[in-house]
Length: 220
Image (cartoon, rainbow, N blue to C red; front, side, top):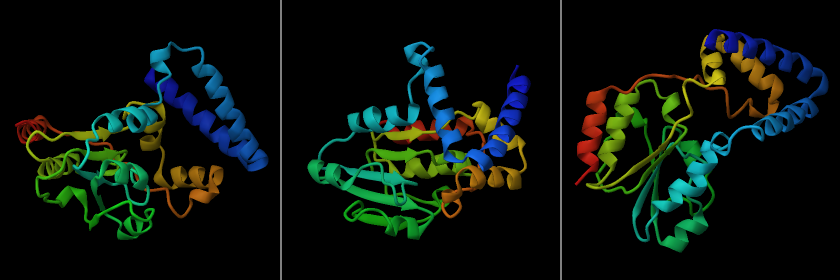
């Protein structure tokens, strides 16, 4: 079943590229509308946008006044904006491998920035919560990244992590197709992403011993 879906997705994706070169944005907008109508046929539980649910509901539920918040991988688009940060009197620390991204964040977003690869970072155990949105799927050593996040958390602290499903058809397709083809498709359909996107995805497993250490560090 998964193989059939993947083959269909490959054909659909190649067709999208061919048509988009002729019709551009209008074809993409049509596909978006069509997908929205299809979603409307599904039960409500299947129509949830996980990313928006994470940003709009989960994260706000764990933000408490006058706490230290770490945004791991937020770069120039921090999860907690300057207004919310000021409202709750938060101390927000941004951790990202790209110092340029951190510097490009809206003014007042971060009280401190740390330019580091999360896989090798050692935290001060003072964060609650630690927010990590759509980063771990791009980290080659997921276990090391989780260990690093656990060192950022204070005792009893929580890590809020959003990761797209590795079993989604588009994710499997991304791993099956050659990287050069992936980039060509992306840049043909969305040429404006040529400068900021197109990094290689890496889907790896976090082993149980790592998760156990994570739990011990996070629970008081």
